View 1 (tube, rainbow, N blue to C red):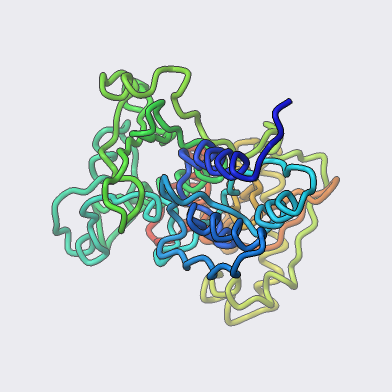
View 2: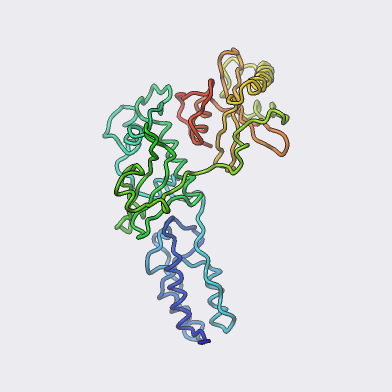
Length: 383
């Protein structure tokens, strides 16, 4: 067997890094410095007994490795030193890990991932001005749905759809379901939406030629039957739907399990209390009685109709929860939604949401098929 020399190892290492650079997800974690081949050469010189190398230059845009700048962790450098000192050749460096919530000024994975073109601002939405943007185009392409709720400030702004796409893309990013074409020039994700004829809609991106902006540029929404999409994404490369649980039973309320509601926690939290009707906010004792009675009524409602318990996704804990309707003042009017999480062999009710917040969160999984949870006006996103 031909012995592995320092020079051949250095060449193989750089080649390995190039081969394993992230193509599907360009964002890398912050704790992996960008080191050039020149830096590696200086490191080799140092370990061979020459002048200590200058420290690697700080990355000007560490979230986007280039062809000549492999991503190397401190552990990788330690293994390289061990090899050059005469130890066993190190294992190839692991691919950079993908952080579930990419950092950046926007805090929004989609905006970090690609240039989206002109997007209508909140002022444009409120004043109903500006040219239609990518979200408006998607609303027109997808099967008809109320994406505004009972919106009064910015009707036609498709508030719920904007929130849905933001979190669906983030979930696709977390699960590695952003697909890249075989030549690396295009990427795509599955929106989870369909046309009125039930044809799946995808978001399509092309690689950005500029080095001072996100790696991708949004092209437009594409149907699976469109030629340019089929050319780059045959069935084997087509991005899959995002998922939120591996257990379908998580979507159904099991009435055989005991429901324990943290009444004191809910009422002692000012954020929760502010969501109650004003009459109950001013009378904590009455609020306590109303909440207990509403919970009992909700359990009976779910036993009569399992669809009354609506599944939702909680991003902070990456878990599916259930929403139960709470009628506090009038049995025919749902005032709040009780958030229920499974804790071992029982359920725990620990917070309440407005119906607007509840619908926005539940719509991430599917359009709620419930008689009590409908699109509402307040603009809320998963918290």
